[in-house]
Length: 304
Image (cartoon, helix red, strand yellow):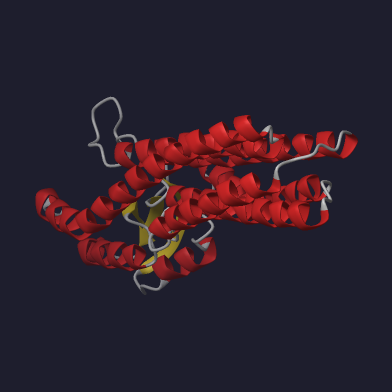
């Protein structure tokens, strides 16, 4: 086995910068959004705008999901123990699932709110809506921008990014509806924009939901191709066969694999193992556990 401390030190060094910037991104996002929820709620209350109040509620769900994502991000860095041999890495997958569900609940809320407004159109103060929502556009866009660099490396960061980008869209929609209300007095634009926004959120959340569901039941991560992994392992001439190949996600950023590999010559096992692990690492599998067998020996593991 490789010197764990040595590899761990390098690993830490490479990731500490990304960790620090993400930690700051989460903290800044939480503080900014919490402040905005308070402002928006107050303005909604004063102007009697159900739109602003429901948007404040929706933004509150953002604060909750940012806190959850930050918690998962920190837990994923905890050390393994005898009780939790992988540490708490799997929490990241659960949280990304919860986040997707929270987003879909927010959609349900917006849809109900919009239908209610179609049935009972209300007069709203356009200018308060414009100014408050404009602040929302700035805050949500800024927060989304915090996560842009890391969003494709981690499902949770992607969730936070989607949340904030969807919210910036919501706020832009609210600004537009405020302008239309001010210029034409057409109040129905409010629920129409609400339904358009709901559609946009569902569209952007669907993949997050599907992937986090897939990872939570130990499915093969979407960025890993099972056949390609087989080819990588079988590319060595000494390898006769491969079976019991399992690929799953340890967290939203780390993948694991186990496999039984049949060799024609056990003397070359160490070299072959090093080579396979190196190749797997290049395609995103950081934890590979390989069991080697000689040709014509019976594999005892009956399960698959």
